[in-house]
Image (cartoon, rainbow, N blue to C red; front, side, top):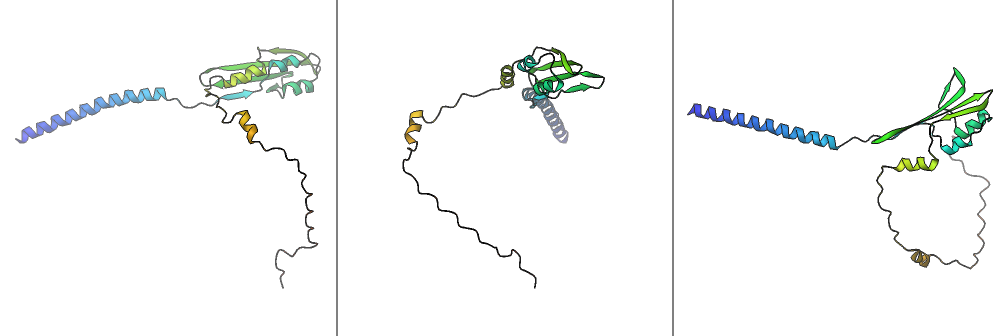
Length: 183
């Protein structure tokens, strides 16, 4: 009889172990699906100087360094070995979108602008529109009150003239001490 009980316990333990192991496989595959569905939030990374096509169009050969700096801003890269070259580099990385990389280089000769080399640059409006692309925006909320309702509750302009304000009381000539004097 004792031998029968030991066998039953062994078979029960084996069955429980197999059930646990098969459940682990199910839980493991479910957790993998969950991990693949949930992605961590990655912030947008904007680095460098954004230069629009309008800014690049404002540059004219013969401008001084200070004029170029007032249009484009301080260059991201200035090289001591190439003192007559300023590089404006811009990168924009967003999750799920191809990174944007743009570069504009200005060259000086005798401290005046000689030439400009640039990648194709977007307009300011195109760049601002690209910042909101890919974001979900809900429907525009409906106004609670119509313009006619707002006019109906608006205060009517008063035509009465108010009395002149009373002059403020004159301050005292001296004030009492803040702390008690030591005696």
